Amino acid sequence: MLKNEDGMSVVMVFGILVLLGLLAFALLNRTVAERQVITHLLRREIAFNAAEGGLEKALLELKRDFANDTTGNPSWADGIINGINTDTTDSNYYPLYDDTISLGEGSYFVELKNEPDGLGGFLTDEICVRSTGITDRGGKRVIEAYVEIENLSPWNNVITAGTGQIGKVISGNVEIHGSVHILGEGLIPSDNAIEMGGGAGIRNNYEGMPSILLSKVPPLDTTIFNGEVVRTLKATLRVKHGRVYISDAAATVGEPDSPGDTIKETMDGVYVTDGYEGLGGGSNVYSDNGTDNPYDIEDVVQFPSLFDPYTDPETDSTYARYLDYLSAKALHITEDTISSDIADFSYSDTLGNSITWNSQDSLDINGIIYIGSDLTIGTKDNAIQYDGKGTIVSTGNITIEGHLLTQGEFASDDALGLIAAGNMYLAGPGLPHLKIMGAFYAESKVTVQKQTDIVGSLVSNYFSMLQVPCIYQVPALATNLPPGIIEGDPVWLFRVRTRIR
Image (tube, rainbow, N blue to C red):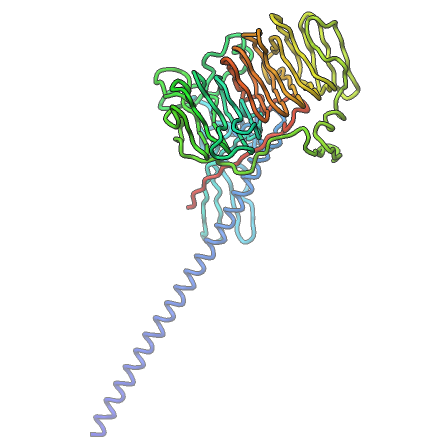
């Protein structure tokens, strides 16, 4: 009996030892597997961090490519990114840097891909980025990003409106061709930021522009919309405070798409927090992003005031007002009228500022000209043609009473800036059908009357539009501004959408 019990004990001990061995083997395998998983995850984390670093470096290069541009025509499709010659302008991925770059325990390489515009070329302000992070022994992560850039400068709109009057910022029966940005800081949600009646509207094209003006501006960019090649202003409407009030069924923001033509009718986007009211309301708004999107850029943009303090970026000198900075940099003259009734004059200084008036309706201007009074430009039935790039500053009001046209192309060749510390009047009673080209700023109000055609941009706290004027944005103006223009530097908004692999 004892011998049988001893034999059973040996079997049990052996079984326990086998079981313990199996458990130890399983534990060892699990430990090894966990270590391999941890090592794999660590390598992926290192690779991901390297890919993130590569993406951030590429985004910085792309931002600087636009910010440091001196040509007036920044582009991501020209094969040169912030001075880095990529030698590539096709639609395939191409390396931004020649070599893989080490970062911490990993490394990365970055590739770019141009976005086709559907017309055999590429978009200048949209691009794809692919950043690949790698480590030793196969660790790899890829981050892909679609990148867009937009200039939020007030001069990249046809109208930029500031605080406005109580209850309204823009009112009138006016055709506005281009982007509109209304801050409306003095408005409450029930106030109307913009009121449109009759045939008023905001458009995304140059339809109706007189031929004499059309011949003096660069052609609009083209894009593919609903399968068709169309020309577009890439127009948006942004309203930070206040409503869009549409009082007539014929007044619209954008227009319904019309197949078969060569223009883009719908707006690229509308961003209105307080909504739409009136006869048509939101049903009269035609936009690619619908009508439910609120104001989308928070406090990125503020209305530029002549009475805000300013620091000269070239000298670090500080001025109590931007107007004081302009005064210090400008050529001061006493002339308060520029018209065919005024004798010839010519002034210049050692800073490169100059103005020459020929009573045969020719104006040459360069730099900044400062006038310590009201200013009147032009007379009825006369057309002033200006040459050069310059800005005239008035400490009072500015009134334009005649045609004001460029000699060359607006704004790459010629661009006139007019800055009024008070109000600006573009055509008055009895002055119909004027044609005016420039960059116009008024601290208080801009009034546009009659069937005036304006090419350029208007920036003011509020506006009055009377008797169907038409205003046309020229996108090239924002990067070809005359010297001294207020808030002249671009305000770049960067949008990045990423996908991780």
